[in-house]
Image 1: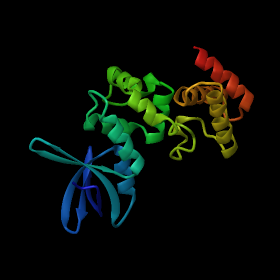
Image 2 (image 1 turned 60 degrees about the vertical axis):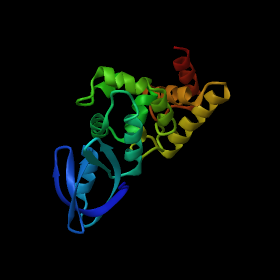
Image 3 (image 1 turned 90 degrees about the vertical axis):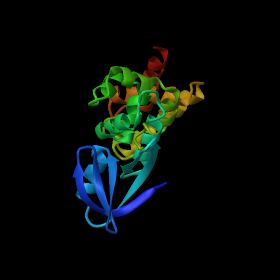
Image 4 (image 1 turned 45 degrees about the horizontal axis):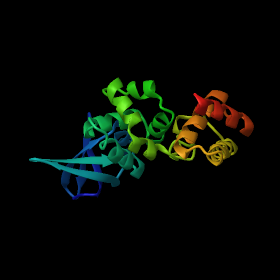
Length: 207
């Protein structure tokens, strides 16, 4: 099993690349976002690898970040979402944006990912394991991209975390509380006060 490769980008193509490791070219299947990272770099680069052996085929999937590899591993556990569809999702959304879409149950946003479709998007969002994976990753501190929320400063991020904690203290489960506050924050904007977020979050929970 191969878990990591360090080498130079030899060639990139639709859906993958060839990584030259000491003169040996490894063919990697990658998301568009990983390919963009590799193409922007120079010299030897580290690529995390997921090795899949199926019947007579050995496929190596490459990832620029551990977060993307973790998202890939979670996605392929969903029924009908194989490795290729998982890469399509990760080509359209960063791990943080994917977590936000799942936590907030943004079905339309996920369905708009090229090649995914409505049925598969619903299956991803409704999968309990994916909801569990999304908890915490959907918050602004997730992966630096805001998780799909409006741009928020450090103070606003703390306010959101406090609002989630408030709903949890009221007896709601954290996954549902996180999703409700995420939707409230998107609607109210970055200047929303804590009490407004909590009120709006409670309205979301009541729907």
